[in-house]
Image (cartoon, rainbow, N blue to C red):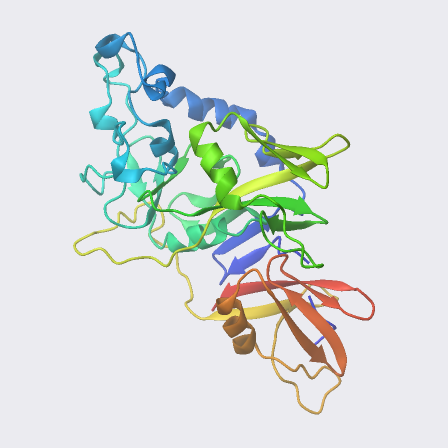
Length: 361
């Protein structure tokens, strides 16, 4: 075992899924604005006046009378929302015939069909549920993961940009629906690490604002901002730019859901046309990147110079307890610290880091 392991920017699930972290360089595909324009041309936008409470055009309106947050999959009010949550309910007569299709796998009028979340793809012939979408959800819940690539599908390799909710380089659209009960967490980039608002730093000091406070303001107006003070300095969190701005600097901000295990729904048949050939393992395995770039499993190597004090199973057990925490271990007498949030391991004495990853085998 070559010492130990930096934010996982090419983590894979078996050979079929990989993700990319915020520390990685953006791909050429991410700058392809033509794909964005093509996607936007296909949609009928939600009516901003309806969402504010009153549209004077009524049935003559050319826009959808649907909750704009429901379309994005993040309405905090869920079934209690006073606005329409389904496209079929909110189609004015002048917009008929141009409406994006609802999921073809469910005719339920709820935002989801009873599951906690649904990831769906649309190739121009309607929305299809993504099978095994808990894998997408698990990666989306990690603040450092900015995209995911899924191989061996009927569409070929599919790259999903989590930040913009776009499929890169293909004429596909992606969306995430949920049951309205998602707990959204806000993070700020500090020292190349995503830190949750309200969490304690290395000195045990927490920020004076909680993630839930930010989310409450965001739900009221996602184009506004949230202002707070730290040690006499005024900080502004700009929702539209997803930045925390002070007098002298700007920091990245991101918003991700708390991961919830998938919930079985009786009688639900998943449409597998999008990922029908996706083959995934089920057992988590922890690996570190060696000097040559190859990945190696964490395991005991007794009576060798690379004997590790923990195994992959030990790490997984700790990870399940707190997937944002840390774990100390030793290799041949040297101390290391594994950071689950940053997906790196650090040599305590030299501060040398290596990437680590969690794969399904």
